[in-house]
Image (cartoon, rainbow, N blue to C red):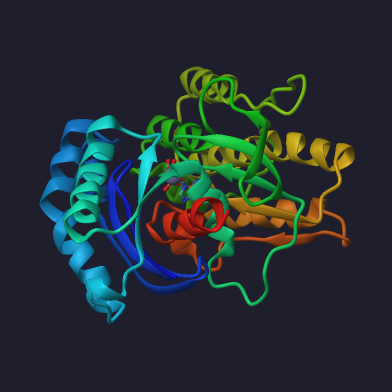
Length: 316
Ligand code: KG4
Ligand code: ZN
């Protein structure tokens, strides 16, 4: 089954053709990140207008790169929610119009389900349930337990900011670019001193919280104005360590509590190599660990929407 998938929930306009939920025939992303770098964050109105300019060429390119014409497409999947409303509406309206005009089934996909299924793309073998997925991006932060397709139990979520948002806000405090995650990771790698420590929030259950950590960084910088790049790097490193620990503590707590066969790490923040390293160190040898097969499947993309549309909806 070939699905044409469309994603436009934030600042990436994306289209992909995915076969049977795992084989990516094309994956096109037109990002307006450069525009948002100027404003150091996403301006919803600007994002929606950029989607309108590029969505049809992006869909056409995805079809041509997959060497498909419309007759080869069995269904159209689109990110339905959550996201920026104006941005979502561009993708929804495009997918609805195409499905109606071409008489194809329309599959409405939850964006977070897309991130959860990003670890199913281009894998040599099929993941085995039960699976615990930690999905961490700019807009969301969730611990999801799956016993099978169409069965997602949310065990934990953020009480305030998502981790990605905290990375972006701390990058602003440190005067780094947008998106902040990659900038902090790169700078943290250059840190020479590793003495600074920011507090980790300890919550009941499996929830997360990042606003206290962000505020600690802000107060630290106000009390000790940054004098050179070495200090900036030390703060980036200390923040990154605290943020990763705050993400991993609830995950390790679930592993004590539930039967789990595989642990998956997805979403934009899963591109962070220090995060992957700490997770690998903490997970025992009996568990299979999976990350998205390519970095491009960590951040927003349409291939993951095609995978979720297939496994979560079309097949179940
Ligand atoms: O999944 P995504 O592309 O968009 C949302 O659905 O929100 O995630 C974007 C987030 C941004 O906050 C960005 O700073 C973060 O992922 N991010 C990273 C890294 N690459 C992207 N955070 C930490 N380290 C990275 N290498
Ligand atoms: Zn996302």
